[in-house]
Image 1 (cartoon, chains in turn purple, brown):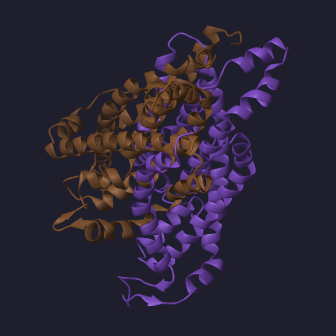
Image 2 (cartoon, rainbow over the protein chains, first blue to last red; image 1 turned 30 degrees about the horizontal axis):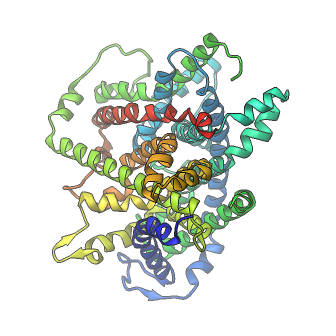
Image 3 (tube, rainbow over the protein chains, first blue to last red; image 1 turned 60 degrees about the horizontal axis):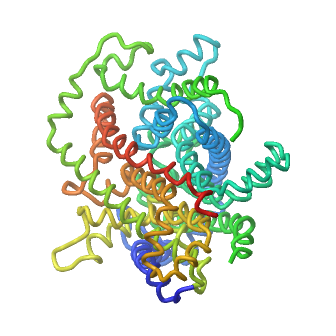
Length: 292
Length: 278
């Protein structure tokens, strides 16, 4: 329907903006990644060094470790957020007193800037002055110390991420569920399907594109998160919560090693892309093809 | 739908709300404590309230300016991004464009970039490349509005696409047969049905723009500096002014909350979907 020219016209502004602000900087970073460049180092010149940066990162245990930590962080945070967010979105489809107030309260964490979230959680969890370790010790005798226990720090970053970003999942899934046609559900109920069957065979396939879009967004954001983690733990203890985004930050800013930082960014971008592409091809594309 | 117990539901949501609100309450507690009291044994109840931080923040004209910048930049960006994404999703969903699934996937790759390294090319673009005579994008609101498209536009396209795909094509076709132009189809048929999705997209893109920190910290200095960046000026290497920072953070919640309440109403506005389909 319609001519394809209208379609391209509608798409054009998006392509122009993303081209100018997306492709151009990427090409620059790609170019820098093949150079040794530390503008504030002993030799500030930009020297072409082929694939040296990439060779270096394959054996960089700090980098590999941070990728591994980031994947764990992304996995636990995103899975919990999707499950909780979906359940809450379903609950918000029912009627109960004060629903709109509760919905607004639930979305409040989103409007707190990540840098503030990190600060508050830090003040809440710092041993001896934080309220959470104080009561954990008072009630359960559990000594929580995010400054020395890697596990405690890891769990705190995950819990903080869940607190901050579950509302985003709830809202996007809520929009998807609201938009679903009612007929298939009524039909299934008439046919005597139970709740689980309805979820598995009707709701899930219909909101699958929305779930996947949400997973992508959350996964990507979890992989490049900097400010929240920086404020909460600063990457510590040791390097236990130094996730990739923060790792790159530390290479580029205190060390001003632009060449190596760019190479890591290119690789992280590439890994994220491949991971998302596989998910996309495996789970969304078959369905899209069928429907067009 | 299913049977439900309103009392149980309300109780559940009260518990959830307490968990959600606690860190925000704690932010408030920090904002009304003198600095020395922060490092004593914590207690949940506030004994005395110390308003000096607020007095300091509210009389600061620089912060007021940052706040206005933030409002303009995030509202401008959210509106721009939602409109562009709506157009783009309509094109991707309804037209048979060559390579459209690849274009769709490519858009999201723009959000994957780790910010730290991209600050440098952005800085060069803003100070040297995208400049007409003396006019540069650096430290301008327009510049920030355009820049935030890099992470918000992909997000908006990806959250809107399922909504637009979910609107049956038969509706467009029926309207076209009745003589409606493409513009009329978009405005009269697709737009009303896409409202919940559009509202959610608008809210979330607004939030991302409002909260953005790294890019604003690098690419603005004064004229277009945002409140999130202004607030971070109190986090320094020699020590953080927690109280001042927390009180600014609490104040920034107010405009955000207003935007939220206004836009959220439209999320459930699309409940008539089933009826339209017949």
